[in-house]
Amino acid sequence: MTDVLMDLPPDPILERRRVIQETASKKIGRRQLNSRILSGVFGLTLVLSLIPLVSVLATLIKRGVGVISWGFLTHDPIQPTLINQNAVGGIGNAMVGSLVVDGIAALVAVPLAILIGLYLAETESRTANFMRAITEIMTGLPSILLGVFAYIYIVLTMKAYSGFAAIVAITFLMVPVITKAAETAIRGVPHTLREAGLALGARNSKVSRGVILPVAAPGLITGVLLSLARAVGETAPILLVIGISGRTDWNPFHQMSALPLDIYQDSASGYASQQQEAWGIALVLVVAVLVLSLGSRFVAARMRREQR
Amino acid sequence: MTEESSSTKTRLLSRGLTGGIHPPVKSDLGYWLSIRAGALIFGAAIVLFVWSILHQSLSAWTSHGIHILTGTVWSPSTSNYGALPLILATLITTAVALLVAVPIGLGTSLTIIFFLPQRLKTPITSLVELLAAVPSVVYGLWGLFVLVPWMNTTIEPKLASITGGGFPFNGATNGFGLLLASIVLSVMILPTIVAISRDVIAAVPHEQIEGALSLGATKSQTLLKVVLPEARTGIFGAITLGAGRALGETIAVAMVIGSNPQIPKSLFSTGATLSSTIATEFGEASGAQLAALGALALILMVITASVNAGARTLTRRALRGHA
Image (tube, rainbow over all chains, first blue to last red; front, side, top):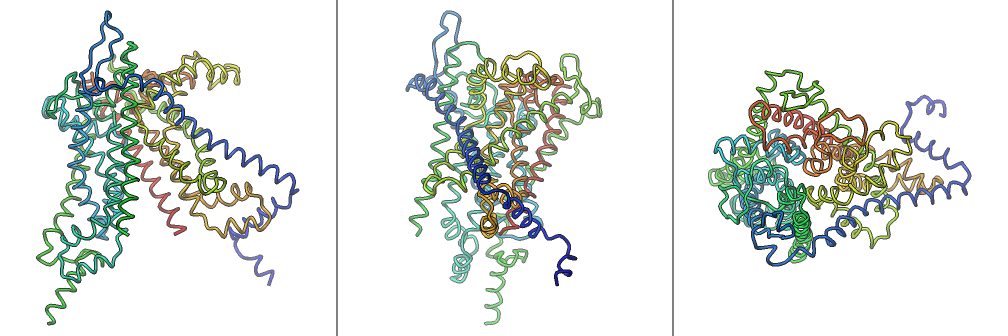
């Protein structure tokens, strides 16, 4: 019997058991000590990974809070001059720019992504699998490539930088993120609900609108808010296509400004006032992103509770 | 009667429950078409996207050929478009970022799953996830105003004294450069690595862990010799995904790397990556330079798309293996 076992090809589980027993046969006291030390090292890595977060947030509060005021949020910027170096202007133009660009992009991206999510969740075909793979790969592509895309098709065609080109890039960024969330949420809806709707004689479109999407809503809203949080902070694609504007302007076909872009431009400035402004905007931006991502959790949790 | 039941059957079949490839009944044609139209629009947009970047770089490939990939000088003012310095800087910053972030990220995942008390798990996990929520431009700002002075006065002199001023910590220190970019990148990819590796580590079967413990292995031995090997496919997936993010990260890197396209001689030297060069030069570019930047975009797209596809395969395989 033993001979037969010896002739078997090496079994990974047996092999692992052998390794464990070998290590276990070393002195227990020493091993306990090593284990304690290693546990300490693991704990240390956790502390290390939280240090940057603490440092970023602390600096944001230290340098950013003093800048924030109602005027800072609503007024247009002041160009610093040699005589007037310390004047911190406002970021009203960038607030409006971000609102217009990300708002319109979300309005386009959400319905489109929900349709694709329905398609991916409800069909099993090679085309669907391929689309799913492409969508996931798109999620990981560097956002600046979408800036290049929007530049080639919009800026070169219209011969002008514009908020519209930024909207195209940001929409393209949001769609795969929301699609993924939508597909997961729709797949999570129990089959029995769909079948019940169909059995009552409802059309597919009616079942999707009246049953599946409402049940999947918490997941959908989480996806939308998270993608918005990502979009609000995107700088690279906007940098290539939006141009520059120092005035509040609601027209997306003009050049515009945006919050993350202002941080990037201010950070390169030698003026202390501009750097201060950059920290102020960064604080606004991080608060917006935190509200969106924590809000998504809160809303989702609350809706789930109500559904029960 | 028979007609009615067969129509119900068709409806159920068209519902996608059995594959959705059956032609829809008339009343559902609109729905059937609209979800496909959504997918078609996005598919077409992706085709246009890939085509635009190919097309944009076309004239650069025809006029410079393979020299774009192998040329060692990137200098738009003298019409030299060799991307090798940029490719090298991209690979080096990503590699160093992984060297820093992978051990810390894996340790963090293990700590969260195996050492933290239950009531701390969720808050600590959310804190690490918050790292992912901070926009890239804010990390750039933080690197520029918090890390640069610290690197300049503390970290770089210390590292230089370790190697005695030898490679890779040689040359002048000024805070900016590849090392700072790598550190900022490591912070940015940490949440990705933690999130994915936590999932795959948590998916390791309990029997394996209990088995090792019952054989007399200590907790750390179990983690190192059973849990990590068991989860390795997924961990490679997490690392690859982190690498994909680091390779393409743009704004934060552009702010701290020094924007100086040269073959890096040390980790202290300034440099420029593929993406940071697109970001910093695109605004003033036209003609041949624009085409060359298009070629950089193409190189970046090919690298990141293949890395992401690899990551996707690895993580899916890992999570399916335990499902």
